[in-house]
Each structure stands twice: as C-alpha cells, then as structure tokens.
Length: 558
Ligand SMILES: Cc1ncc(COP(=O)(O)O)c(C=O)c1O
Image 1 (spheres, rainbow, N blue to C red):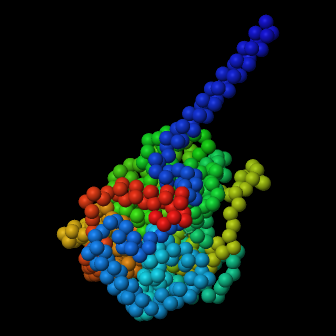
Image 2: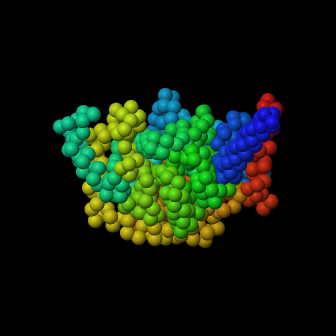
Image 3: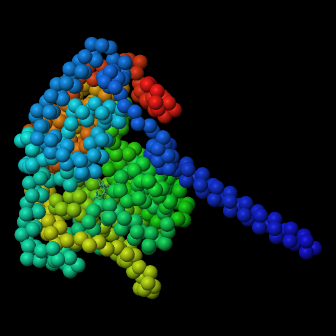
C-alpha cells in the first residue's frame, strides 16, 4: 500500500516535472519563433559567424573587375578612379594630411577610416581615395573643410543638427554667457534647470525628468528603472535597432560579451506580441522609432554594401498600427514601454515620435539635439517609474549618478534650445514637414529614374537612405562621387543622409543637382555595368564562396 502511494507520488512528481519542462520548452520555442529569421535576429550566431569571416582583399585587377566586366568597362573604371583620386588628393590636400596625422593616435579615426567600404576593396580605396575628417567651419546648411571647400551637409552631425548649425552656435554662445558666473560647478544646480524640466515635461507629456551625459546613458537608466520597478530581468529590443553602445542593448556584433538578459525579437510580428503576452520575465520593450524606415534590419552602412539588396520603405500607417498594438500589450502586461527618441526626438514632430505616431510611452529617452549642441541624455517618465527608492525598503534603491549630469553649460544651451524651439520661426519648420520631405524625395527619385540611374532614395521625413535598384558590386563607390560633388556624408556613406529642417527649396535643389551629377558620372565611369545574369543572390553566393575559400586555404592565391 505504502509502496503504491510512493510510486504514485513519484509518478505525480515526474509528470509535474515533465509538464514543467514541456512548458519551458514551449516557451523557448515561442521565443525562437519570435526571432527574426535574419542573422540580425540571432545575435549570438551573428557574433560567432563574424569571428569566422577571414580578411582578404582584391588585387588591382580584381578590384576593377570583380563582377566580370569586359575590358572596355574596366578601363572606364580605371580612368574614373584615377580622376577621382587626383581630385581628392589636390582638392582636399590639407584636410587629408591632417586626418592622416591624427589617425595615428585616434583609434576612432582608424575605425571609421577602415569601415567605409566592404573590406575586400579597402586597401585600394584607402590608398587612392583618402578621406579627411576635419572641418573648420559651418554656416547655414554647409560645412567647410581645411582646404576651404564648402559642402552641403548631409551628416546632420550624427542627428544633433535639426534646426541648422547657426541655431546651435547661438544656443551654445548665449547659454554660456548665462551661466558664466557659476562656471563648472557640479552637484548643485543652476536655476535654469527648473525651466528646462518644465518645458521637457510639457513636450513629453510625462511627469519627471533626469539628466545624463549621452543617449547611451539615458537608455541605460530607462532600462534600469524598468527592471527595478517591475522586478523583472529582461529587456526586449527589436532586431537591428540601435540604442547606443551599452552591452545589454547591443548583444550582437561589436560587443565581445553576450547579453544574457536581452531578448532580440522581430518587429511587426504576431509571435513577438505572443511572447510579450505570455512571458513573465520581461521588464520593458525598447523601441527606436527610426526602425520604421527599415524594420528588423540594422542601421545600414556602406561598409556592408556588397550588393544591391539594401531596402528601405517607411509606411507610417503600418508602423503606427504596430506601435499601437505594442502599447496595448505592454499596458496589459505591465511591461514598461520605452521610446528611444535619442535620434528621432524633435525631428519628426514638435512632440517627437510620441506625437508623430500618436502613442504615449511610459519612459522616453532623448539626447542629441535637446542639448542645444552640447552632450546630453535625458530620461522622462511616469512618476511611479522614475522613482529611485522604495519608501518601505530604504536599502533597495535604483542607483544612477554621473559626474557631469546637469552640467550648467549643457543646461544653459538646452534652455536656449527649448526657448527657441517654442518660437513661431522654429515651429514653422514643422509645417507640412512630411509633405515637404516626401515631395523632395519623390522629385529626386523621378529625376534619377528619368536619367536611368539605378539609385533611389527612401525617407522617413528628413532622414534618408539611398537604395540601389539593379544588382551591382560597386554601389559603395557612389559615396566618393557624392563627396567630389561637394556633398558631406558621414562615415556610413549613402546609408544615411540626415537633412536639417532648415534646408530651403533652392538649397535642396542644389543637393539634388549634385546628387544626380554624381550618379551620372559614376554611371559614365562604368561602375554600374550590369551582366543580366547577375542577381543579388549570385553576388552573395560568389562572395560566400570567396570567404569560404580564404577561410579554408588562407595562403593560396584565389
Ligand atoms: C536611437 C539611439 N539611441 C541611443 C543612441 C546613443 O546616443 P549617444 O551616442 O549620445 O550615446 C543613439 C546614437 O546614435 C541613437 O541613435
């Protein structure tokens, strides 16, 4: 009898354990299903595979003919390349000299200088098309290099420049004058912080504010608060989304350590909503609304422009619906919805992405432009979520400090920014913003199509991505033709064009003329010669074969 009872108990325990394991397995499977199929959706695998990619590069012959172009095309390319090289070396001489000197000791310059084009082409490009990273002045929508060349600025200063460089020169200068008496005193506040806080609360529609030194820190703090208040461990980020360089939000390539408490899930996915509805360990969902331009894909760079598969298309209605559903699930499950508006805040609408998409987040991270030209990160949030201690547990706190937080000079430049922001002049920049920039993108696309150029742009308001309409291995060359035409691009090249909102029609038309001229010259120089049998798939396969061959037989000539 006792034996039977014991057997029954053991069986019961076994069944319970089995049921628990099945449940856990089921949850894991659901999590796997909610990952995007691409490598960007599988951070660990991506990191492991990245470690297998061997370095190799093309010799001169292959550099000009890796797509099998015939001899006449190759000579066009050679001549075009030599012409560009000559132009760069003479027109940008001092800027290049200075950059080369600085690169010896500035690791960031070495990194960006190395990752402008796919690595197979790097040696030839660095030797013959060196780029300068120095500027001496900015004015209106232009910047001037050390050789006195003026460029239309499409870098947007990493997104800081929303209203034009002169605007920020003013905010920094006037701000500095207002806090000069206090100087660099930290810890205590300058009274300007009170007005800043009020204005940010108004803009964000949220209760409280904290100040940090960078967007990365603001995101770290928002996630930490969400974990503290929900007492849950995991953050959900979406595949491809950038949220700064803190480890937990950058679990893939670029971070040597795996992020153990991060789920990278697919955006616009029912499976993701199911995971959010059913798991109990999710503290927060981080959204970077810029991803609306390329959901589930990493921020593009020209260094990965090996073929023409880069695609981008922003559909505001579809993306808004997705965010609304996300909002609803987060509310149902007490998951903290964090909008990372470090990049898009103030760019899409006066009330940022919250206003643009009509969605209220629980926490919002701002950065970049809100510092009025100086370094900043800001977190705004619901009162209950911003609190960093528990009344009933005095030792259970959520720590967040920073020596330079709320620096008087930053607060003062921010104050100038926030005051000017309210003026009718600045508010007028938002009038018909999307219509203006959609219209400009369409106009440029029409011109490119009329000229039979295999290039189109996609845009989310004044944020643009250049895409390529016909399979080619040389699209990365366009950035060099654009620079030769006097367009300043950031180190990611044609992957991101950031316009400030003060571009007039005439200035935009000048950019469009130069853009078309650059693409035409590139076409005339033969880079877009196209073998009809070539597709993006055949290009990728060929590159994969090269990589495997170099990996397996590194010393052989391929
Ligand atoms: C969406 C987003 N979040 C966070 C960051 C990080 O901001 P910071 O570079 O100021 O640390 C960036 C920077 O580009 C960003 O675009």
